[in-house]
Image (cartoon, rainbow, N blue to C red; front, top):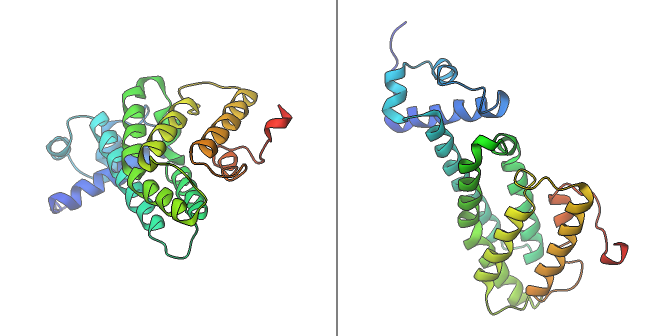
Length: 215
């Protein structure tokens, strides 16, 4: 079979596409470099021209996903006919869908460094768009905060870690209790009405909002 030559960026993207599919379908731990080589139909020499290890491939996959998250969240923030609340819902729903296939792989104990990188890059990627959305909410009169960017960074960073079931093995009852606290805190910090962020229950897989009075 004749050797196929491709541009650097084209081959780089192909390796990431094949690797991401393998990580999602076979699992990161069970995927070998040989699996990636077979999927892309390249030799080891070509692979090592792009990446030093399988971990470096996963690292690049996460960076690319964060780039997608940044572009998608900014596109939502720029939508002219949606309220701030509607934009919040779309951004967080989009995040949940985008990372769904990769989350299980990142939750393995030996993937802790990659997991941390995923959380960090996601926060940095979507902060500008969410700050813009909070600014819009302030203009709409539904949010009140002198620190829109910092408020989002602190709240989202806390939620990303504390509510991460890969880091903390909360029971359903514990997760619900922490979600109730998170919703209460974000509504308080942003100065909005009670229930404004109840959509967070659905984002975290709880199909209904549980009022604080039901504790």
